Amino acid sequence: MHTEIARPSDAAAIAAVLHEAAQWLVDRQMPLWAVSDFSEERVQQDVDTGHFLVARVGDDVAGVVRWQREDPTFWPDAEPGTSAFLHKLAVRRAWAGQGVSAALLAFGREHARSLGVRYLRLDCVADRQPLRALYEGFGFTLYDCVLKGRREFARYQIAL
Image 1 (cartoon, rainbow, N blue to C red):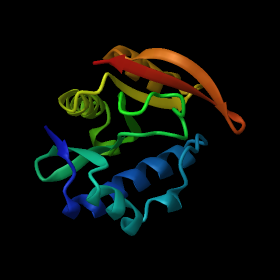
Image 2 (cartoon, rainbow, N blue to C red; image 1 turned 180 degrees about the vertical axis):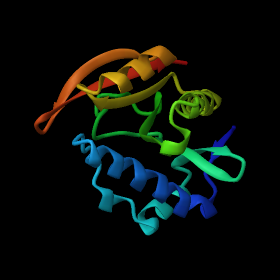
Image 3 (tube, one colour; image 1 turned 45 degrees about the vertical axis):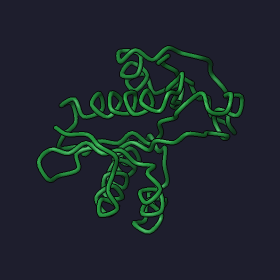
């Protein structure tokens, strides 16, 4: 498995991974993201600005995560320039349980570290225990829980 910053030519594959993950959650009555949010055009904009990391197995994109330097929606209290943030971690079902998520988290951590930030931060819906266990098992610590609309989100960070 190889992880890297996504290339512009990866947009269609990234959109497909995100769409598959969103639909999988809907099918299990655990909706999180709107399937319609992942058009290739919308994803292309984020890829072109370096906001996606990919995990490849051979030529296939097995998983993705959105990487950003600011997050005013979930982390408005973060001191500017001190953190990097991960969102929309998604793995193709064919690669589930094979270390893709950990590889993406590790690459995100190293990418953030290379830029000299102090924290890598992320959030998830607070009632998603398997996802929280993944993050905690990787070394993220719970920072706090916040309400956004009618949902509670757990905010995690890892010191770099």
